[in-house]
Length: 198
Image 1: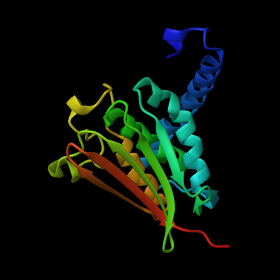
Image 2: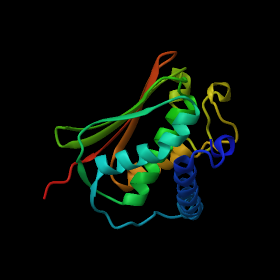
Image 3: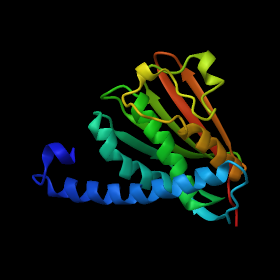
Image 4: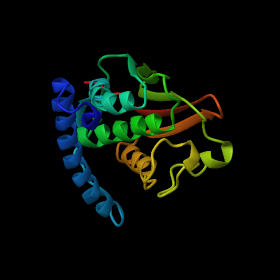
């Protein structure tokens, strides 16, 4: 978008530049964390964290990429949902899940990011409409370097690490990640954590 619009859209240019700088720093940290993942557990101090606020922030930053593919990210549900977590890791979790929804979603279809409380669980669901995932692939999507049918992706060059990192992040937070998919209709990733009560 920045290449095609140049400086004619000043707001887009500055927003995009800020996003690139932030993502460059985040990716640098991700490489370090991937090296740490290979042999030992990542020890992080968990602090009270607003899951819904982090989700809204990530959705806003990812809206530029969604716009590139004629999608819109819609956030709904609670505006505050507290857990014990590590903010940067939870942010990375949502970036990976929303990025996946963009890559495998249909153009001109909304991506829904919903945050809600169910019993004593803080839950976030990311849903996109698209080709979906066949049952045979559902058993492998969290495996490192595994990629769902590349023909259904709107990008090339993915290493297939995103979902395995998501699973690792959930394990660090003693949370659960699941996926439900109806081929040809939609896919929903659900993450749930123990809600924090003061």
